[in-house]
Length: 166
Length: 138
Image (cartoon, rainbow over all chains, first blue to last red):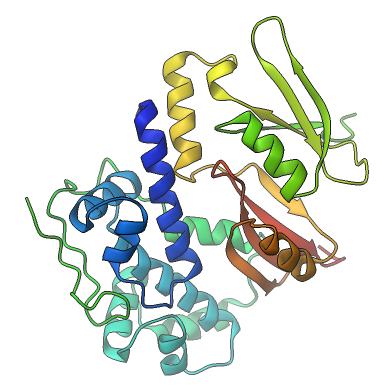
């Protein structure tokens, strides 16, 4: 993939938005607010974000939250409900289903298996984080336009996050 | 026998801005800033304390890369896909507080890890670094 000069400044704005999701993953930042900070309309932002990172901002935030949950399940002495709320989900049902979708097992089972496996891998956690939160194969993801931005049941996007247009 | 790493190349989007970021915000020392005959600007910095380890802050547009490749690299840096490595600190939490005050962006605050305390830092171009205070046995 080649980038034009103009792309670099938009990619920079998209990256700043993604950094904000990474940093403030449990806060209720509306996608529209991230979009306007990056200089985009909401719909255009969702499309551009997806084109750059292979996932919509709402889905990206879900993955970030689930990734944080995985770490807490491995390392912290907290209940699944506590972890669910700590990472920004408002409903345990939604948390469990998103977690299972992305991890292939429920949070409870994940914790049991992680405990059985023993200690953490001896590599910097940030690299694990970068693998777990991104970057999926952009080319393999469905066309950007009109993508569903599934965040319903989570904090941060009261509108439900379905991209309009296209 | 190979006994160290002297220079690590870091792609940056704007050398003036990178120079300011690394020296004024991160507190690195400027070690070289010269323009070579071929148009390349050789800009190096090192962490304070004369470690002998340098970052070469390179502009893809004025390097050995062809124009198209340079544009691709610039895009990858801007979107935050590249990481040159791990910065070592003796006080991750203290440095984090200080650097945040100076306007340095972190995507993750300091957290306990098996190997030490780690935060994740962005440079002004978009490169990310682990920012780690290692435990001795690691």
